[in-house]
Every structure is written in C-alpha cells, then in structure tokens.
Image 1 (tube, one colour):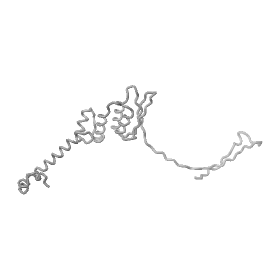
Image 2 (image 1 turned 45 degrees about the horizontal axis):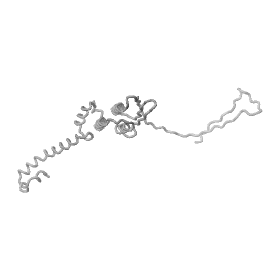
Image 3 (image 1 turned 60 degrees about the vertical axis):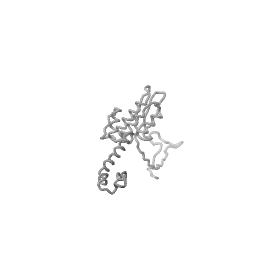
Image 4 (image 1 turned 30 degrees about the vertical axis):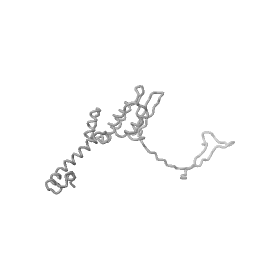
Length: 194
C-alpha cells in the first residue's frame, strides 16, 4: 500500500505518474522513520545502539572490549557509572551490585569495629568482576578497607547407612582378667542393617 498517495488530493490517485512517484519515495520515507526512531532510541542508555554506547563509553573513559562484553552489560555499566553519585550507603551499594550482577549474587556486609567492608560475590565473568570492584572502591568511605570474598556455589549429597557390630566384653568384676594380655572387649563382624 502506498501511504504517500493518501496525502495527495483524490484527483491524483488515478494518475500513473503520481502513483509511481510516491511508490519510489516510499522507501526513503521508511528509512527516514527508522533513522528518527534510532535517533530517539540513542537518547537513552538502555536502548542505544552500538555507536551510541561507544560514544558514552568514550565520554566516561571506559575501555570496552566488544568481543567479550555483551552490549547489554556495556549499557548496564554506563548506567552504573552515571548513577554512582552520593549519598553512598551500604543499602545504595547493595542496590548497585544487585543491578550489576543480579539480585542475591553479591552481598555486602560491614564490620564497623574494624572498619572492613566485605563483598561476597558469585561471579564468573571478569568484566563484571572489574566493574563490581570499581563500583565498590568508588562507593566505600576512605577509612574502610575493602575485602572481596568469592562465593562458589556447590552441592553436597548425603547418604545414610546403618551398620551394627556385636561387642563382647571380656572384663568382669572379680575375675582373673589379665591386663595387657586379654583385651577389654572383642568386636564381632559388621552387619549392615540399612
């Protein structure tokens, strides 16, 4: 359907020259619409194109590696850099880490007496780890020591076995049991019950 023809008066709808002219102009207007939409999308970090993301990274001094880092992570890193402004609290730091690595994958704790900030994280991506480290160093107070702990998720399987051994006591009161010659007790063979 030729949508440009609808903008012309009814009189021109049956003229072949105008039909062909508007049909030839239609792809140009479609690409114009797409360019306008991309320009609008580039105004926002989370919908920006690769080129807009590169421009923002250059402005923030970020050395990105597009071969190993996804575009989504690069966008989240830019948002993180823009949003790490005071007030800096533990709650704020926890929210930033949840945004970067996902809820529950990084936990912050503070030892107030010893001035130690501990971040326990289960990370398997080096770029995300570097961004977490940078975020923590920017957010922590100068008088606190930053300590990184790695949390590795693992599973433990338990099995239950019940066995029994009969125990025959060799010592009795008022007997002639000899110390060091006869053992205190003797164990029978092991019997597996379950």
